[in-house]
Amino acid sequence: MPIGITREKMNKLRDHFVSRQHELLALTCALVEAESPSGDKDGSTAAVSLMASAAATIGSVSSVERISSEEFGEHLRIKAFTNNNSPPIVILGHTDTVHPRGAIKERPWRAEGNRIYGPGIFDMKANCALALEVLLACEATESCPRSPITVLLTCDEETGSPSGRGLVEAESKNARAVLVLEPPASGGRVKTARKGTGMFTIEVHGRAAHAGLDPEKGVSAVLELARQTVSLSELNDPATGTTVTVTVVRGGTHSNVVPAEARAEIDLRFTSASEGLRVESKIRNLKPFDARATLVVSGGINRPPLERTEGVAALYEHARTIAKLLDFDLGEASVGGASDGNFVGTLGVPVLDGLGIEGDGAHAAHEHIELDHIPVRGALIAALIATL
Image 1 (cartoon, one colour):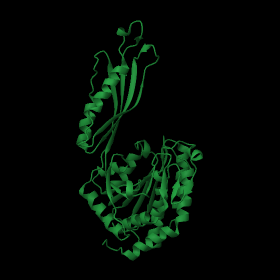
Image 2 (cartoon, rainbow, N blue to C red):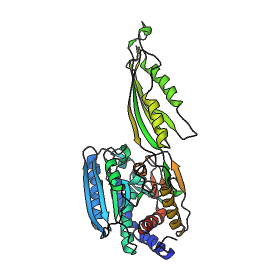
Image 3 (cartoon, rainbow, N blue to C red):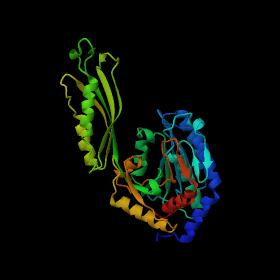
Image 4 (cartoon, one colour):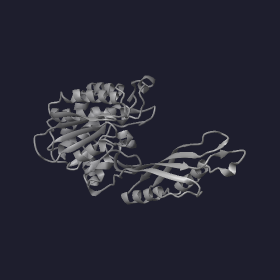
């Protein structure tokens, strides 16, 4: 049994989230309605303002810092329980969503039975609100953490964290542990491994010609790209979990012209750093099938993999033991999607991802959370930061 946590204390934590559900959902609703798609500075500022105001009312919070990002808006760093110099525990999340501005008018906040729907609620506006409620729960039940707590919410996670990555790494490198409040896998499973990601663009330059009068004088960029697409698909390896997917494709100008230009975007997923480097090299060194065509490849690995290290496994087992006091078995999963937790994994810091509220439909029209899982999830996270 985790030191300092009993079944009675776990029940008190769970009861706190039951009693505070109205306040938690009110903040969540405000965050969902303050639309903040990645790159929308006004939306980012609005969401951060809501979180910063709420954080300022929490007694254990010692600082609330808004960090400007020139292209994306604002990151938010909240520090709490800063009464000792122990390595901190970092709670990680993000305020940006993939849903475009105006989505809330098409799919407004609504409750249906045990579910609440809204753009970005599952990934991850509800979990931003949950992070603050966890701090309140620790205060209210006298379950104060033995380590300082840093809540870091970035504003560009959905686009690969071009400005947030440095913050994530700086806050996490000396942490005792990092808890990522991304949505869980199906069945509420936490994520103990994630694939790394790579994003590439391939541009093909051929030569235009009249498709009817003298097609032989042309060099079809579309044909070359088609051949490259087949070649890239051969890099897929189900045994190792490597996937290479040509996603967005564009090419040509007119229906009667041999296309001189074509372009494609490539998505790479991999389970180990060495495998990512191997496939990245293959993509970067593509050669044209038609020697008259020219290839230009740009991009690279965006996020390293989050691998299930001994530290990750130990943190998971600790969380699983706590979950048993709440009478449920906390499962684990390895997933293909990446998060800011991937950056933490390469630092050698124990990280547990997918700790958010259960639901479904991330990035989709049916995105929702499940109400009856909020108290259990909140109690689990509060107990984690109180016992690590």
